[in-house]
Length: 411
Ligand SMILES: *[C@@H]1O[C@H](CO)[C@@H](O)[C@H](O)[C@H]1NC(C)=O
Ligand SMILES: *[C@@H]1O[C@H](CO)[C@@H](O)[C@H](O)[C@H]1NC(C)=O
Ligand SMILES: *[C@@H]1O[C@H](CO)[C@@H](O)[C@H](O)[C@H]1NC(C)=O
Image (cartoon, rainbow, N blue to C red; front, side, top):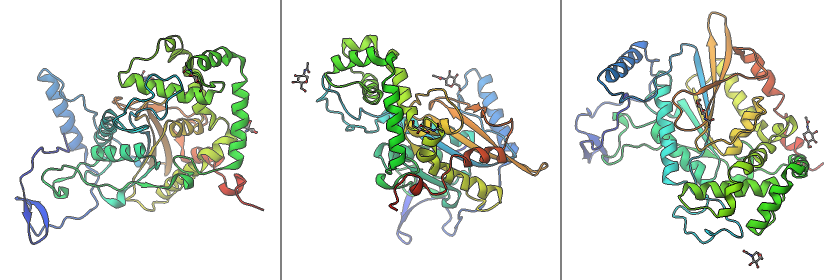
């Protein structure tokens, strides 16, 4: 509604400036990323009015999310899982072993691209009164896992979040503008993908894994899966991979083998979710698995509380199912989670000017279709969760020196 993309924009090539311009755009105009004043409630009222009106006219064309009104909001941090993907690997007896996935193994599918684009549009509408309509480098920072599907998800999310304003259109056929996405190489990434090696973490993880694998309640399932896949399935880890593979194949419309009927998704779901949770199963694992990400988030919150870097009001992270689960667990939730494609967790920092205090709100959107995110009640916090209480909790999960705590440094 408030960020309309035109299908075809009359533009002409300007030989003096070597760029495409709209006819109407006066040549001298040099509007830069100016401070966009927080838009007044009148905009929201008009939008709401239009929504109501269109519903009165007989059909609710606007199933679209309505903007969220808040005078106290200061900072938003969004972390999401990438969109729908093809299987990462197959298994020995997989009838689709040689299937030619058009997007390659572990690739983001068109459905996946669309999911994140829609999620971006949802957040654009939801935060219409907070996130400036015009993309500006100083306002936002986006970090992604270096996996192609995460980078691509970040790009389509941003296409939905920041359609070019009229001034920003730079080509008549492309209502899109580049928005940078930062990432660390996998072997250095202890922030989003958590793929940087950490010896102590690995040893603790192996210990937890061995313990869970020995649980007699899984024996029968492990035997059954090993027999039918013709490979060893005596750990929740290969069961996790198998579950993901079957799910992607099913989503691609492939008919799964008969033997999967009795176990997928039903009996396989718990070991699958447990495997995701195990990476950050207890506080010691959380410190090493997600501590560096929490440290970065805390830095941003601290800056906002000190009224520093005030333009930077949005941080976006594009990660994996395990990234969502690790943050979920670090926020004090123990229940097992299977985050859908594009599931997102949001942290909001609010300032209560009268009380001269800050508080944190957290939300979960379990998929990209959810209109209004579910507010989470943090188990370690009062309601509202004060900034002090919040940071006290996450500080416990932030290592002073991650390398040293990982035992990576030689002494
Ligand atoms: C099982 O695996 C073995 C070796 O990996 C192979 O020789 C055999 O043909 C496989 N059986 C089935 C049913 O796929
Ligand atoms: C977490 O699990 C590991 C591995 O079992 C263990 O060594 C560590 O003490 C546990 N930490 C906590 C806080 O329970
Ligand atoms: C997803 O969230 C919505 C609302 O927040 C809820 O109604 C729905 O049951 C949830 N779905 C699942 C599968 O948890």
